[in-house]
Amino acid sequence: MPPVNLIASDLPLSVEWKEEGLFILDQTRLPHDVIMEKHDNAEQVWYTIQQLKVRGAPAIGVAAAYGLCVELKKYKDLSPDEFIQKTINVARYLDSSRPTAVNLNWAMKRMVGAIMEMKVVSASELYKKLIVEAEAIHEEDRQISYGLAKMGSDLIKENMGVMTHCNAGSLATSILGTATAPMYLAHHDGIKFKVYANETRPLFQGTRLTSWELDKAGIDVTLITDSMAAHMMASGEIDLVIVGTDRVAANGDVANKIGTLGVAILAKYFDIPFYVACPSSTIDMNTPSGKDIPIEERSGDEITTILGNPVAAKNTKTRSPAFDVTPNELVTGIITENTIITRPYDKGLKDYFKEKK
Ligand code: MRU
Image (cartoon, rainbow, N blue to C red):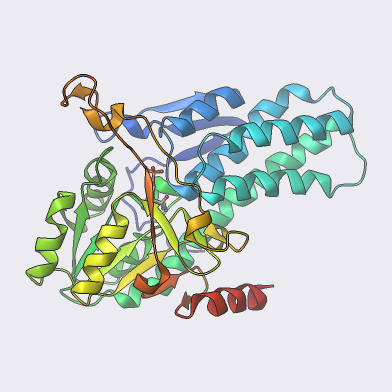
């Protein structure tokens, strides 16, 4: 059994499934209000994902898997064929809530695949199978966090400064996070290090989420604005960067929260190792390169306002890509739950999946 006490005991979980009820933490209200909202249909879950109440690639996949269950519960009277068709339609609908994180698409395909594999049975048996599969996705995500922690924690040495961008923490997954998993374990092992959390404009995942969850666990975390990253590296305070990712392409290009590319370019300039941590489900061998990763474009309101308060003049023209792509040559290594993959990534990723089978 993995150690469960690496995150703060009072840190809320992003997604909870209790007696067939789906509860999702509203992350837009953090850190000031901790509110778990019950979800009873797919539409609610769609909006919750779209509005970033639940966010972070693995957490979105888990939320959508349970979202499928809460919706399909209403259709247990259908014939098995009708139930399967309904599941396919609802999965497609949930998958349309956000385009970049492949875990959402992966989870929806896996849920549909699980019931397609079954011999002809009743709709209520198919429904039960959906629940089993969603719970399996959730549990695997927890186990994967511990794998990432083990694989990555040796990178963190005594007195290091570790920079991270966005929130690839417990709140973005089922338990320890991806980029933060090695930090939680290194801290548990008594290593003394500092984390620098970039605020992550426009929605402040670093300010509101990463700083909060690491500080709660007793990790020494310092919040900086995104524009301070270069200065912190230039002044020698950063020895390592670890970020999460929403999708890794087959050539090792990596999509993550907008601003990550800038951090990676800086890390290269200052000769600082730049690692990406993710579960295998974030690696999309069907997407050949970063050019093929769909980049979500969000409403300009998210940048003309700061958390709801207007800051730009009315009618200011905006662009708001939510993610960027870091080319593989800037990535020192991809930490997965099983190993750290290094260059050349096209070969390394192919071999990884061959060995994993
Ligand atoms: O828009 P968000 O908050 O969903 O973006 C999240 C990120 O970019 C994370 O770094 C990524 O999903 C990895 S989460 C373990």
